[in-house]
Amino acid sequence: MATLQTLDPAPTTNYALPRIVLMAIGAVVLATLLGVAAVRLSGADIRVPDAPALQKRSLRFEDGPQGSVLVIDASTGQTAMKFTGEQGFLRGTLRALVRERRHSGAGPETPFELVLRSDHRLTLVDPATGQRIDLESFGPTNAGLFASLLVRDPARQNP
Image (cartoon, rainbow, N blue to C red; front, side, top):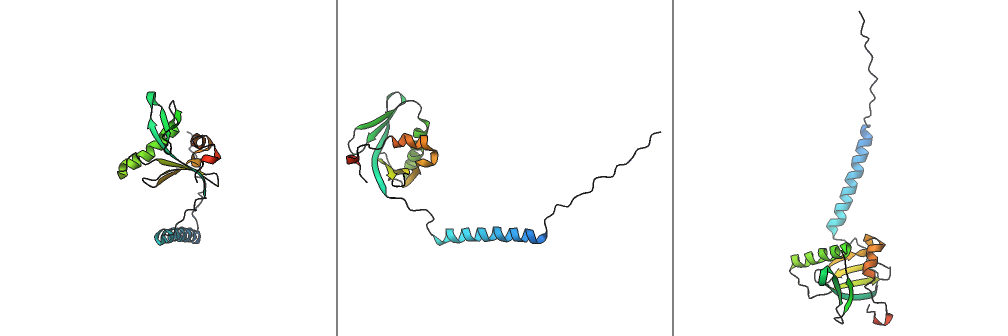
């Protein structure tokens, strides 16, 4: 008869953190939460102020024929550009702003403002709702789509 040999299990390792380390971690987390709560409750504005505007253009966007998007210069009423094709980023950005307009009861009569700032940030602002989209957050290609709507003639800039 064969005998079964019992193998000794491997020694167990205790990975528990010492109590003082756990208390220190808890103190840091608590201090962080209290600091954030203090700033939020104080009403302090934590945003960095916007840089001065180099160029501002008031634009309206309308659906065109065959699914195109027409960009209308609000100051002249002329079509500034026509986008054809899917234009996912353009449509998505406008859809978000229009949804907020509907939610607040504002209509399409107020044009959007495309603002180029001195720090080269590009912002699409909806004066009707106060909503804004910082376009550079979506990468240079997507921001470039809106940058193409800026007036190239310096005489027509209106900061």
